[in-house]
Image (cartoon, rainbow, N blue to C red; front, top):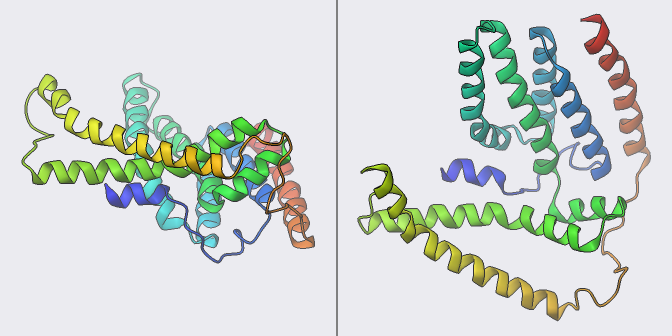
Length: 243
């Protein structure tokens, strides 16, 4: 579980994709998402999955993307079995399951290659309210951390003899109380420290706070954006009308 949970933590690596402007990475992620959403045949889903895998390899996030994909694998198997039972056929059921995985990986591509600071700059570029930006970026920062805390608490309680995987359903739910209580306490402590940090930095003192980072597209970013759009438009046409 630690192997899966650590995949949600952002890690900065040196790659061609991560050196691009975050708005370019967002546009690539949106294009992949749209292609995954309209993929309704074996050929289309194969092209989409190969594109996502190729970009993940170029970005050096293939291993971390594999960890996050494991989270969606259970739901993908469930989608496959339900559609198979509904007599949609083996190929169609497999395509629908793979399309779900493609949708998940296309969105995780952006978050695995974009730091919370860059995400905040992108949201500010969209002129979103400051409170919404702060809440979303804070969730992106701390949800993986809380997940790691939960796993550490579970291991600590298991070492004390707590059996989480045995007994009836009611007993298993009851055994979660020693996990939830310290986890809630840890979350409250983190939120208190965050509130103090916000107060020290005078959060909310001005309606238009300045930012340390300013987004600016280079010629390389513009080239990648234009080329991706040029490739995306005919691909959409082929997906909708030709294939």
